[in-house]
Length: 356
Image (cartoon, rainbow, N blue to C red; front, side):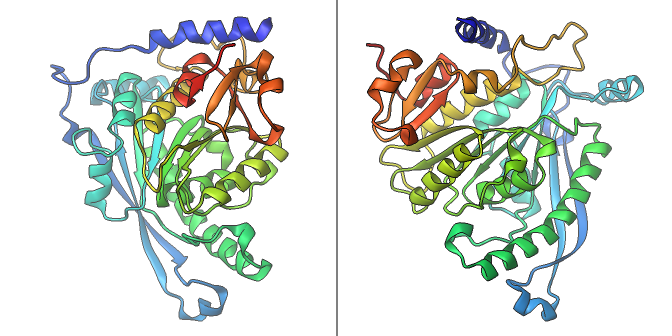
């Protein structure tokens, strides 16, 4: 009864996320004046393994690009700094496979972004968008649990070396632009998902929720990142489908709060269903992110994990259908195929609901 009331509360709350249309706003800075590029010079090694370490090939820099929301102004930024509060409601980070600074800027520009739905979501909710160079340090086709211990250790060593350089630049960017340094939402697709989940597993303190899509390769989950809510999606026809299901099961074994979805007849691509599910996931996550710009903001009566532990619906990822929690045990063939779906909007985006 308690979780039903909580679910009803969040369902009522989501419509309140409607904001004015982002196009044609007068009195706001053009997007070109709200995008900033910051380069972090590094000493990270780009060798492919310890055996190549003597070559000392260097990753010269990691480029960060920040896009402030359309309602941001320099005057508001100055006032926020004086008040010692962040200049925006929050941050959503978008990871892709790109490195070129101009391409990174394009990826988070409203008119050219392949993730336009997320840019629009950011503008509506006063969120800064941040992206960065894909600095590699992983195998794009082989998951860590498919490697022998020596090779896995080599990649882990190399990725951590680059990660320390990324973190220095990341903290610098957050400080320079007066952005929140926690409760960040994170999205990654393809190579961007490969790097995003590896960052989140090692530096979970920065993040609140993460959606990764069509990774192809996965790291091994650890107990460290249980404070994040995860959405893991792939395609039934995607190369890494089997690795994705293993990753999901290991997360469940560690007690993660995770939603899993494999798109029907989907390969290494996205589609409208995955994008809609992503949007409902981030709408859910933003409900729990403090709004320091609103003195009347109050935290929900439950935390972000409650409805993951007591879901309204349960999905059967083998058959692509969802059931009310009360009937799921008798409908889903095995526990390993069950997926917690915390709210009706998420369940409806995830798949068909069978109520009877």
